[in-house]
Amino acid sequence: MDSMALHDEIDSFFDSAPPLKDAAKITDNLKKFIESNFPVSGEGKGRRVVCVTSGGTTVPLEQRCVRYIDNFSSGNRGAASTEYFIKAGYAVIFLYRRGTCQPYCRSLPDDPLLECFEFADELDVQVRKPYSEAVKGAIRNHHAAVSSGLLLKLPFTTIFEYLQMLRIIAISMRSLGPQAMFYLAAAVSDFYVPWKSMAEHKIQSASGPLDMRLMQVPKMLSVLRMEWTPMAFCISFKLETDSKILLEKASIALKKYKMHSVVANELLTRKEEVTVVTTDQNILVQRDKTRVDSDVEDPLIGLLVDKHSTYIKESST
Ligand code: 9Z3
Image 1: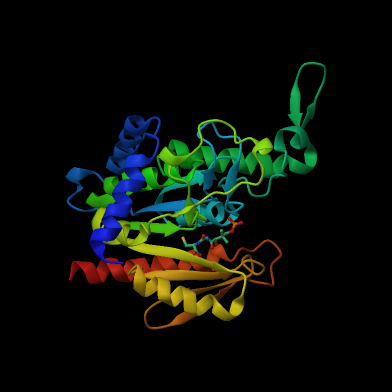
Image 2: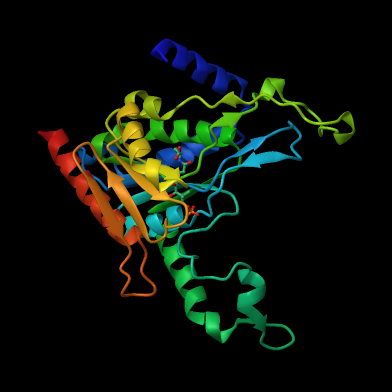
């Protein structure tokens, strides 16, 4: 597709999307967050900032949405990676699907409120012993990251919200030059129903089988890379269920969208290993299997932080 046609598709996606609620507030919070980590008066010096996207986007089928198509992602990858980026000294803009896994909360059970707490007496509630360390750790680390201005959390649900927010974030991060990084782990829908052609009310099953035409979501990665934040270090993800096509597809994405690396992962083994695909090599990254509590994100973020350092050095010469 030529660039004119892509721009037309992108314009029509954004023009037809329902306006983002709180856009002004989100822009303002981003401005403050970036300014505090990377002061304008700091002569180009400041903390590196990474935008981590996490969780899957939904595609509503009705404007007053009762039904939607979803993309699989628990948000574990994004939440774990956020923790390791903060540990490595980054400030993180965490763009996540509402209700998915949160940084520092990965070791809590699914229903933390009901499982972790109990009545101490008739009035007071206390943490149940087995969850004591996990609850204290989650509150302490999460609070420290947010209150010290290193973690900004922005939730989305639909593909419309996700792409509008990603664009606002990218444009706000432009001033960071090569110190900005995108780590795009969210599972983003490939198809959508344009808002204007979407049924307003709940689709009726009495009308028989449902025929619906989905449009292709325009490929925003190349616009992010080339126009929204041309200097940023960009990492995207490629998910496949068939290992035979995974690396080939990752390498096509790398070239097509001019990413700096593509992290290739297979659905079943994604927590054990990933392959970082770059223009000159493929690097297999594995979880430390000698430890039960190790994560693949630990060595993965280590590797990407090193690559980002090299990129920053090369950009300044
Ligand atoms: C990923 O590949 C992520 O690693 C996972 C993480 C979603 C598999 P979890 O959230 O899983 O820890 O449960 N994200 C990208 C998925 C995706 O849709 N990529 C598109 C593609 O592969 C490109 S943007 O075509």
